[in-house]
Amino acid sequence: MIKMKSNKLGMLAMGMAMLATAACSNSGSESGTNDQGKPVSAEGKTVVNFSVRESSSFFEAAEKRFEEKYPDIDLQIQAVKKAEEDWKPGDYEKYTKTTNTELLSGKGADILEVAELPFESYASKKLIANMNELLKQDTSLSGVDLQAKLEVFKTDGNLYAIPLGYFMRGFIGDGNLLADESIDDSRWTWAEFAEVAKGLMCKESESGMDRRYALANEPPDLILWEIVVDGYANFVDVSGKKASFDSPKFVAAMQQVKKMYDDGIATAEPAEVGRQLFYSTVLSSPGNLIDEIHYYFANPKLIGKPQAGTVGTRLAPSVQLAIRDNSPVKDEAWIFISFLLSEEVQSMKEREDYGFSMLDSVNENELRDVQKQVNAGTYKLPSGKKPQVSAEQFAQYEQFMRSAGYFTRIDGKVVRMIGDESPAFFSGQKSADEVAKLIQNRATTYLNE
Image: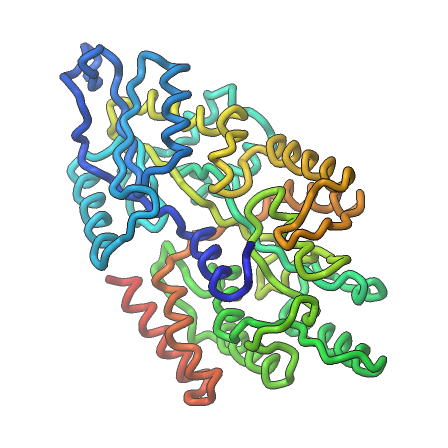
């Protein structure tokens, strides 16, 4: 169960950059090459090396199923760390440097994870393959829902990395209080949210009810962090390596967030369950929709999150896989990636740790299973309570899962600068302009290294 600040950051970091990967040296148990120049094992099988940052039960189970289905291919998984093994200081930099060196020298794994690696640089140097043509030729992946999801994750129309799942952030309000409110939540801003929240708080106060905050247990730097993540393209030109944190838009966002706390609309202090009007949380699976959305309110309402120049729900990929462009086993590597996107693998229990499935059919089947349990009275929330979920709410959740959303690749080092510098503004130590310039200078220096 996700419980606000620390776990939110953890899940967000995991939705945007979790499971970053490591490319190991191509040192599997190969015995030579065949007449096509492809590496083969002692048994004569074509060897495909797959580099992962950490081992997992999902990849191990997928490997077993894959080799049973394709007995002529020997998939060799090379993990830098065991599952949940600690990463010591310098480990991440070491694996990134090793990956860069191997790719530039034309070596390395055939398939590699690319979260938080210099993805665009690899693509521009043609070190990783554009999988558009491979996808086009693969009739097993012609489903409209999958094609729509993959379109979201393309870079300038090119498919250099394919995710195995994704996370979304939900914004939930007290449905009982919002019943009489007319809100266009499809594109509302944080300023509009503040006005609506202020009105709701006044209404409750006038009726003699105890005070409730619009948002609680969220420090202002976290709200600002979310604004930057949701609208990253407004503040960072990735291809141009330019930052715009000294822009009026960013300064206004800082001031808007501070005003919400100064006006008592939001507080960093924790609140008891149900003592806030809205909350934001990471959603990771169909079942998680029920657990998270129905945690705080008896009658929750899933609404669009306030935005800063963006529209829709941001999708945060979990694992993203790429193929080394000069791999001699590019076709076999694609067969494995295609296999991972099949309904068989996307439905595996072990895959659920990687978020929503890339296939709507898998997500909808899981949600319908949950709906049957809820209707039968056998489904319980982590708190032990039985949720009351209407058919209309289930229909809304299904539509929410189907929404393609949008994706912007985030640089974790850049967004961490928000948390480093913005508290000085929110505490009154520095002005918004001063903090904006500090972040701008740091981001500019980093982006041009």
